[in-house]
Image (cartoon, rainbow, N blue to C red):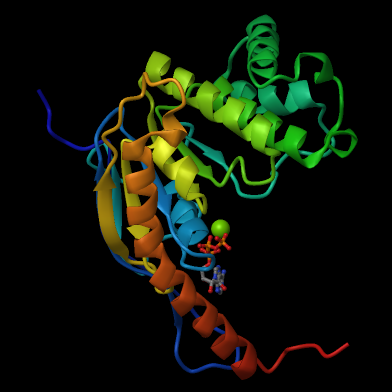
Length: 276
Ligand SMILES: Nc1ncnc2c1ncn2[C@@H]1O[C@H](COP(=O)(O)OP(=O)(O)OP(=O)(O)O)[C@@H](O)[C@H]1O
Ligand SMILES: [Mg+2]
């Protein structure tokens, strides 16, 4: 049996040059994490700590300043259909209907027309949008757009799903039902999932492990194993869940404070602040 992790982040650092400043901004620093095949790992961290930056790196949309990212032991060199990404902001093609947005990745894969249609219908139904196939993105609510984006990423059946706060814009009920749906899909398909969120409850509910990041530059502060009885009736109210919530809350609390201080420092040193 192979012990190669599905996904390996090995000392990943990403820096950005900032206009008018001599020193680069370090968004993430020395991130080392392994995801086993079929694992569900959640990254949780304060706003601006580099979560989306990390997702872009994993998606192959940008390259690390140092360190490397390996998929099945091979360095990621660019975007690929082996990874499905759900971006933080709806990335739908505005000129395509919901159905045709979902079919997009399938076209790239060369899936025949009839099967594309069938799969699109199936995933639209899965995310609760059965009657919305012919709507265009501007005719959908924010939450609906995000559900189309999730359906699209699932439809082309990638081995790895990378999800950047996909449920953040949804109302609580829709969010919880999509969390359950995602867990069902994960159990059924054995996909490797890296899920990013601000939400502590969401992280505990979904993850087998939760990696807590520091405020910028984002580093792995702690990785918490989530060992709870998932068959319990109301998991979120159980003692184990509450203990984990408190633990992760405490880990994040200091980081959120630090992030606020950093943000204030950023604003006061930015020359381009617009006064209106
Ligand atoms: N292309 C870029 N050029 C310069 N700086 C960038 C760039 N992309 C991101 N940054 C900076 O890197 C830091 C991390 O940004 P990122 O979007 O990864 O944070 P995040 O953790 O996803 O935040 P949020 O939770 O608010 O989505 C921020 O300070 C941001 O301003
Ligand atoms: Mg982000």
